[in-house]
Length: 320
Ligand code: CP
Image 1 (spheres, rainbow, N blue to C red):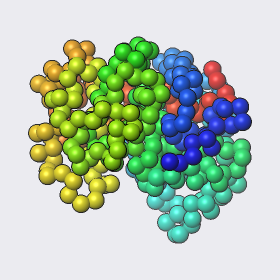
Image 2: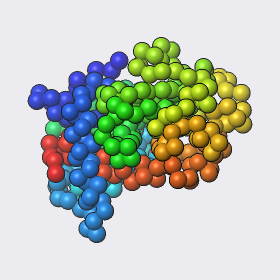
Image 3: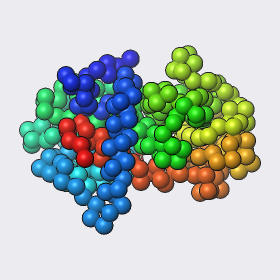
Image 4: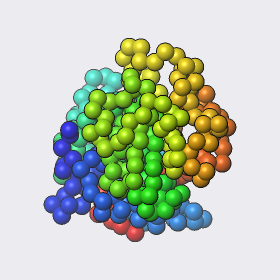
């Protein structure tokens, strides 16, 4: 386990946002409540507040991203910060510059916050440990370890769809749990918010060892696992992280674990369907479900802006 205390200052307030693990309920509630007030800002005609005016934020994405990078950029701009998007493929990292040297050079430009996505688990903690004391580090996804802002925008989406009492909810996370930083962060968040029941549903080859110790119930059959659930979170097969043959074929995976209209009928009538994206249609879910009336997949993307505004402002010691 990576030390999560590094993300809090001496008063127990967020300084970095690296992982959900080790955080407490008041911090998660504060993020959700702050995001709620920012959601109003994103719906106004002038979508800006001056909270981070004069601050400089650098997006450092060493891995591909559509949703996370753009919503972090929009969030920073709506807080009136100056934003720099580093293109790693055209930076001096390709000439052999180390991560630390890249960090030091950007620090010399008086940066206040880094948003980092990297293929290595623990990379965001590494940056946080080595950054200058005034700098905040936000983890935009590190290897298989954590994707904390994704988990918080998912909690925000659930709270908006189902109300604030997570205790009465049965939530199922379906798919490639083994390789998913999103699932790991969601499970920690759902447990901290005292969710009634958290289920994971996956083939045996895609469940982490000792999964029950995470505080979840494990199912290997989709029909059994989604029975009477309030929320279904589908996950992408993380092919880029799989070593060896963990699955027979995508066709076979869809036959056994794909979410179809027919299977959706096993869940509660008002079930909410989620997916962090990117979706592989016809692999983890049918298009009719992805685009259907139970789906809040695009609302998750919109909510990402308000939640990332909340995390950025709280880490900088500013609130609405
Ligand atoms: N959910 C998510 O992290 O999407 P991106 O990889 O597009 O950022």
